[in-house]
Length: 191
Image (cartoon, rainbow, N blue to C red):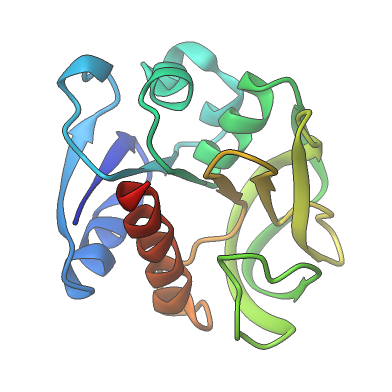
């Protein structure tokens, strides 16, 4: 299993790589300018980024190509999540109440990523912006008091977005969320 972490300049990009490695996945961090036709992987993580980068398509390099053309499962985290939403026809913008640090998140639909996990998780947040309208074909999987779309997924394609940071140790069950995405990638590879 090989899952690449697309580097969008996030402060915890190396943690995403580390969690994948700890879970036995072949992984590396690659620039977001890497041409999609050179990507050899079973799945992609679109990392977080610096403030507001998820709303700046130019700063997200070729992330649109990875979503549109790779045919791989993709999980966007923070800015990657926001970019995915905007790129596919949703809306992201300033949070009414930005979230930083530990936040209680309620799982509304366990789907693939939260299967078997508690209904309420402590998650780590670091965002001024958030997804405010889902893209067509997506559904929300989780919310917090101040952010209605903490997690989303496409109905038919293996595309997932997370506003929170499962890669940091302060998030409950973060490794399990990554393992669930690895399992999605493994199932997709067999198709």
